[in-house]
Image 1 (cartoon, helix red, strand yellow):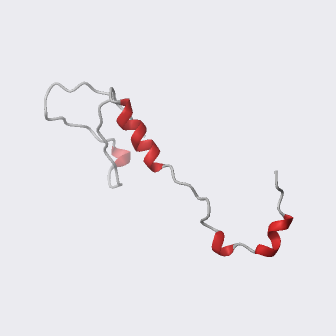
Image 2 (tube, helix red, strand yellow):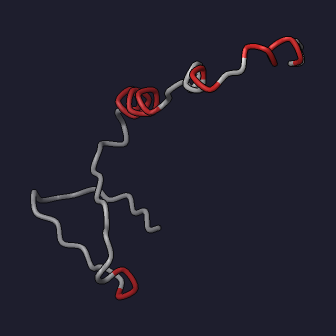
Image 3 (cartoon, helix red, strand yellow):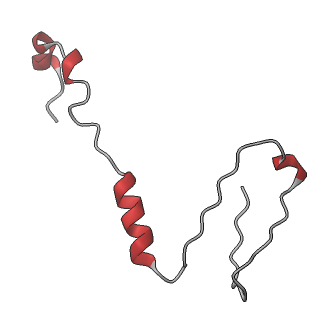
Length: 69
């Protein structure tokens, strides 16, 4: 992984890709570093609960054997 913080002076920007990354999939993400609220919103959207996902596989006869702590 390569992370580089830049301060662009123009609307065009050229990057050099390391040869080890050639012929692989890459993702480029651009966002302003001073907008922390935007970054926090993105992180919160990624958080999802798994609660209830496996309910369909639950054996109700075993629930009483579970630790209630």
